[in-house]
Length: 327
Length: 261
Image 1 (cartoon, rainbow over the protein chains, first blue to last red):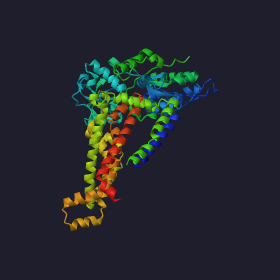
Image 2: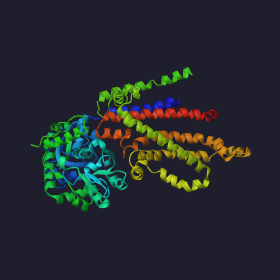
Image 3: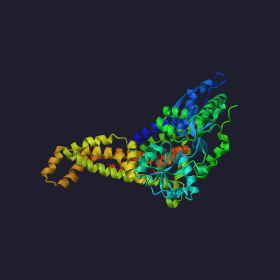
C-alpha cells in the first residue's frame, strides 16, 4: 500500500515532466512586422552586469538604437547556458556571451548561435591568478600541486591558466581547480583555504588593496595576449529570420563600441549605473579593449585553446559562429 | 503473501505506461532540453555503468564522482544522526539544558545551508571537509528536533514504573527512554535521508573537485543536457533505494511498535 502510494506520487511528478516536455522550445517564431523594413522593432536583450555590457547602455543613452528604429529592453542574465530555453523560444533576442560559452554551446550541439558584435578583447591587467602577499608562490611554476579557485569550472579561467602553466612547464593536471564565486574568493584566499584564485577586475584591485595580493599570472598576456573575450550574440535561427533587425542592432552597437573604445570617461560614467561597481573603482579598474570588428582568426584561437585543454570535445571552426557584418 | 505481491506488481503497470508516454512525448516534441528517457538511460549506462566486470561495471567517471559522493553522504548522514540523537535525547530529558539552547537551535535551523556554504569554506576549507560540514549542518535538524520531542514527552507511567523497579539511570535510558522515543527519532531520521541526498549535491556546487554535484556543474557549464538528466535520474534512483533500505531497517527495529498499533 505504502509502495503504491509512493509510486503514484512519483508518477504525478513524471506526468508533470512530460507535460513540460510537450511545451518545450520551438525555434524562434517571429512574425515579420512592418516598420522601417525591420522584421522586429522591440528587442529584449540579455545583459550581464559587467563592464562588457557598457556599450549597450551607451547606445541606449545616446539614442543609437532609436536612430535605427529599435527599442531595447534589458534583462539581467548570468550566462547564456542558464537561459538557453528563452533564447531558443525567442524570449530573448540578443545577449552578452563570452566566446567560451558561445563555443561550448556550439560544441554541445544544443543550439546554433552567432556572434553579432564583439564587446571586449583581453589585455594585460584585467584577469589573473592572485595569491596573498606572504604566499610561497612567486612564479607560475610554483603553482604545481596547488589549489586554484575559479568562478566557473571548465571556462575562461581554467583555459587561460592552463595555457600559462603549460608555457611554464607545469602540466594543468597538476593543479586543482575548485569552483568558488568571485565574491567569496578573497575570504577563501585570506583564510588559506585555496592557494590561489583566478579573478578578474575589479576583484584584483580589491585583492591588492585588502590582502596585499600579488598577481602571479597575468592570464590575458603572453601566450593568451589579446584573446577576444565576449560579445553580443543571437541564435542562428533568429539571425536568419531577422536579417535587417540584426544589421540594425549591429550598426547601433558598432557606434557604441566606437565610443567605448575612444572615450574612457563615457565608460566610467555608465558602468556604475548597471553594475555594483562604485564610480571611483570603475574609473581606476583595468579594462580590456573595446573592439570594433569581428576577427575570425583571433576568435579561432579561443576555440583552439578550448579543444587543446579538452573543454570542448571537438575542434570548433568559429567561421560558422560569426554573423556577417552589416551591409 | 503471493497474492499481495501480485497485487503490488499489478499496481506497477503505470510505470511502463508513464515511461512510454514520456518517451513518445519527448520524441514528438524534439525539445533539446527534454531528451527521451531511453536516451537518458543509455547515457547513464555509457557514462557510469559500462566499465569492466572486475570493478562491478563502474566506469572511471563513476569511480571518480559517484563513489566519493556516496562516501561523504553516508559519513555525513551517520555523523548528523549520531549527533542529533545524542544531543536530542540529552536536551529532551533536561529542561534546563533545553531552555538554554533552544533559542540557539531554532536560530541555527532557520539558516539555509546553501547560504552558509561560503562560511564553511572559509572555516574548514575546500573539498571533503566542506562537503561533510554542509551535509551535517543541513541534515541534523529534523533528527535533533524529533529526538528532543521524542525524549521529552514520555508517558509518566513508564518512568514511574521504571522507578518502582529500581532501574539504574543507564537502564532507564536504554530500556525506557530510547525505545519510547524511537518512533519519533525514526521519523526524523527518515526525513534526514532525503535531505542528505539534496545536501550531497548542493555542498558539491562550491569548492569541490569531484562528486556528482561537481559533475553536474561541469555538465551545466558545457550544456551537456544528457549528463544533467543522468545525474537527476541517478539522484531519483538513489532516493528510492535509500528510502527502501531505511524502511527495511525501521520495520525491523520498530517492529514492536507497529505490532502495538
